[in-house]
Length: 365
Image (cartoon, rainbow, N blue to C red; front, top):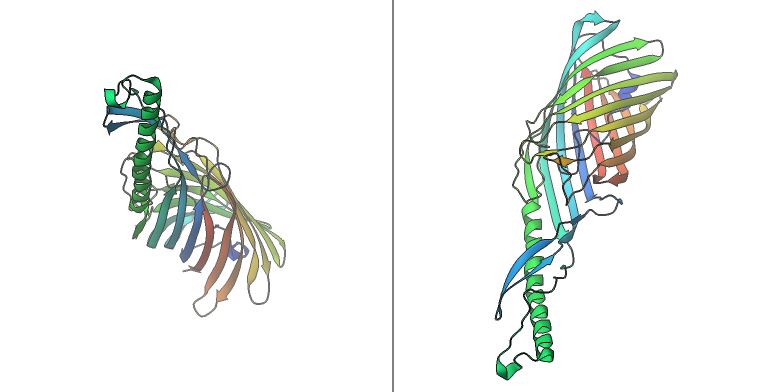
């Protein structure tokens, strides 16, 4: 669904890993993410190539109806810009559980803009030999003369191929225009149950997230159209994050997550399951916290439509690795923190590829 999975590949770890875990009250954050996608990649990391199955087509000719087959192939060229806002609230719960605190959280995404320019680019495939062949010409054109029939069949094949090419290229252009969008709207809301605990130099946060199909989404068979919502399906995402205070000025963070998807009730596709590893190192300075971060997402089961691998899309396993940096500063006037981050795709397979710039303000109430 859209060459993406329900996980923020812009990165989830920032300078907040240095801060102590909250023990009561509310935690809120608002994030604005500017996303620039420069391509959709295939299995080889290059632009995604779509190859269909053998397709039969009939052609009306002066010699009657002829038929031929071809294999459609096109390169998917995508440029996309999105501005995404996320509003997150978490409520710390009173009971202690195994020495830690429970919290309920909700993440509400809203796409302020989603602009996508899609092109399907490819040479016109060569038609197989037209059938049935011409076996009889008018007497003045050669009748059943073998040489005359050969020339006539070759001439007809060339003319049909030329006409087919015009229609095929026009269809590619039309599909690209249909797939290009300019839209906005609510995304897929996520709810989470979290457990947190501090043990010596370790801060531990574990829990599970359920992503709901609340986002703006529409599906039309035969069309490949980007939408704000991921699709009419649910994603269950358990995970655990650990921050280790290596020294007074250095904190190391790691988060591991799993993702399990249900079948999309609209297009009958079940996106494969996946895992994600987030890594970050935070260095504390007198003016703020700085450091690198990396996100690695790997889909480990195939996409399937009605239980079968789609012949055009294949297994379509998403693989994405991004790397970048963050800087976090205190906003003393309101008792909040500002996290600025940048993430750039350094390797991707069957995935959106691009860059992500985010500003996030977090506060404990």
